[in-house]
Image (cartoon, rainbow, N blue to C red):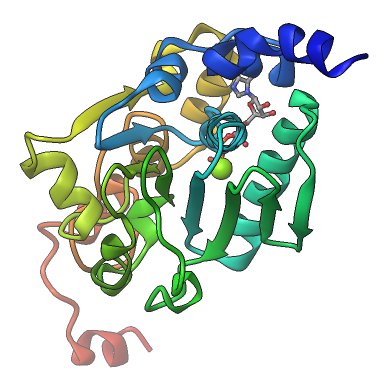
Length: 261
Ligand SMILES: Nc1ncnc2c1ncn2[C@@H]1O[C@H](COP(=O)(O)OP(=O)(O)OP(=O)(O)O)[C@@H](O)[C@H]1O
Ligand SMILES: [Mg+2]
C-alpha cells in the first residue's frame, strides 16, 4: 500500500480514536470509553469497575496520541507488571494503526518514534523515581493507571512532569478513602469526571451476575459498584463478618474456659 493510500485509510483513525478502538478491539466503544478517548480536558479522571476495559482504552489513546508529532504519553502504573502489560496494549494499538512512522527506539517500556513522539510506561514505585527526566507538554498526556493504588508521594514528585499544554488523565478502580485519588474524585469540581460502572454495561451482564453471587459483598461493591473503602484497617472484610464479631453475648472470661474442662 502506498503511503498516500495508507494515509487515507487511517485518516479516520488519526482524527477519531473511537474508530481505532473499534478496529483494535473488534467491538464498538462503550459510552464512557468514547468520553475518555475524546476528552480534551486538562485534567480528567475515570472511575471504573474491574475488567471493564481501562487498560485497553488507555492503550488506544496512547497510540492515537503519538501518531501526531512531538507528543509524549507517560503512563505510571502501581507495579512493574502492570506497566509492562499496559505497554503491550499501547504497542498492539500502535502496530494496528500501521502508520509509516518508524520507531527510533524500542525497549520494554519506551517506544520512541521518528516524529518526535514517545510512549513511556513505567512503574510508579514509592516515589515516582522512574518517571524522572520526562516532560509532558502540548498535546501529550500524563496518565496515572490505577491511580488509587499509587502512593501520594508519587503525585508530589510527578505532577510537575506536566508542562504547558499537557493533559493529565487518571483512570482507576476505587481504593481506600483519604488518598490523592479519592480526594480528587470527591472534592475537586474542576476536573472532568467520567464514571464507568460495570452494572451499567450490557456486555458485562454475565460477569456482574456471577461476581454478585460469589464475591464477598464489600469486594463487589468496590470492584463493580465503585464504592470507596473506609480509611485504615484490612481491606475487603465482608460487613456480615464484622457484624457477627459484635454480638450481645457476654465476653468469655478465662475462668469460663477452665470451667469447661
Ligand atoms: N467496548 C468493548 N467491547 C468489547 N470488549 C472490550 C471493550 N472494552 C474492553 N474490552 C475487552 O475487555 C477485556 C478487559 O480489558 P482491560 O484489560 O482493558 O480491562 P481493565 O479494566 O484494565 O481490567 P483490570 O481491572 O483487570 O485492570 C479485554 O479483553 C478487552 O479487549
Ligand atoms: Mg487494567
